[in-house]
Structures are given as C-alpha cells and as structure tokens.
Amino acid sequence: MIHCIIHDIAGQLSGINCCLALLEFENLTPKGKERLDIGRRQSIKQEMLIREVLDAFSAEVRSLESFDIDPKNAPNILNAARQVVEFLTPTFALNKMQLKLTCDVDAATDWRVIGDKSRLERVMTNLVENAFRHSPSESTVVIELKQDDNFIVVNIDDKGSGVKPEMVASLFQKFSQGKGKTGRIGLGLYFCRITVERWGGQIGYFPLTDGGSRFWFRLLKPKS
Ligand SMILES: Nc1ncnc2c1ncn2[C@@H]1O[C@H](COP(=O)(O)OP(=O)(O)OP(=O)(O)O)[C@@H](O)[C@H]1O
Ligand SMILES: [Mg+2]
Image (cartoon, rainbow, N blue to C red; front, side, top):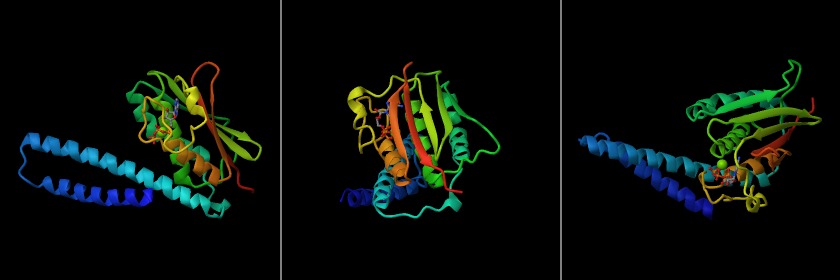
C-alpha cells in the first residue's frame, strides 16, 4: 500500500519537474531564475529520496524471494571499498575530515564476497555517510577490511558520540532515527540489514571504548 502511494507521488513529482524544466525557456527575471533553480534542486532531492524509499521496499520484497548465488559474479569487496572512498573523499575533504581504508593487503588474498557490486557499494556508502554525519570536524573515519574464516568483515569506525542507548535496539529497523535527525528518513541502516542478511551475512553496531561507533558487517566468501 505505502509502496503504491509513494509510487504515485513519484509520478506527480516528475510532472512537476517537467513543468519546472519548461519554465527555464520562459523570459524570467534574474530573481525568477534564481527561485526556479532553488525549486528544481529541491524537487530533484525529493525525487532521490522517493527512489530510496522505493528501493528499500523493493529490496524487502526481493529478500523474501529465493535467490541464486552466482560465485562467478561475486564482487571484490576491496575494489568496492576503494570506489566508495574515491567517491566520498571530496565530501570529507570539504569538511576537513579524512576517510581511510585499511586492510592486510596481500596480492594472493581473495576479496570476493557473496553479494552484488552496486548494492554492496550502497551498503558501504550508507554506513560511511552516517559515520560522516555523526563525526566531529577534523576527525577520521576508518574502513577496515579483514579476513575471518569463511567471511570477510568490514568495520566502519568513527569518532562521534555513538548511538544513543535507547536507539540501539531499534537501530536496524525501518524509520529508526535519533532526535537530531541528521539523516534523511531513517531507511539507511534498514536497507543495509535486509541486503546483508539476504546474502547470508550479518550486520551490527557496538560503541568503541575510546568513544565513537563501530558499524560492522560480514559477508560470506564464495566457495572456490
Ligand atoms: N555512526 C553513527 N553514529 C551515531 N549515530 C548513528 C550512526 N549511524 C546511525 N546513527 C543513528 O541511527 C539512526 C538511523 O540511521 P539510518 O542510516 O537508518 O537513518 P538516517 O541516516 O537518519 O536516514 P537515511 O539513512 O535514510 O538518510 C540515525 O538517525 C542516527 O540517529
Ligand atoms: Mg543513514
């Protein structure tokens, strides 16, 4: 039901976007152009948000269906992490923060995991964006990759104030958000959990002893 409503809102929004795009061809005053630009940027943001909601619901539906694991297409998690770092480094730099990737690099190490590349990058991006939003300025967020028997573990550590104790139990549920509401809608961690679990992995959180948070997940290695 919610899926249908959101889907309809998305349809209307794209109609609004078309009208705004056409307005650009009208004879607008400079002030009018400025306001149109603000309106367009806001509606694009809203479109992105709607896409995320729809993705989360679709992923949930798919997670209930059986799926085949294709070891031939198992993505390399080290490459995915490098991609995420490359993509988010400018955002960190702009805020005088650092994003680091650490792992025991060994040419022979196999970093392939059960999953798919684009969703894997989204899971990592969600966790790193959360870490970014809850970190003090000039601090460092560290992504660590580790081998652990049949699994590869990813830790994402920040130097923020940690998750409020009353939120920990519902952290990976839909629409779970802290009072500060620094994020968008509270679907990020929910999406991460259903995705990771769908691939046979686990995800979790614990506070670091010297302050800050560790969000971790682990994914199975394909049998070679
Ligand atoms: N690294 C972190 N440090 C402290 N609190 C966190 C951290 N990551 C998540 N949280 C808390 O968990 C809540 C849920 O996170 P989640 O990613 O699901 O939603 P969001 O970031 O608020 O919104 P969205 O991801 O949809 O944009 C956040 O609102 C925040 O209160
Ligand atoms: Mg988030």
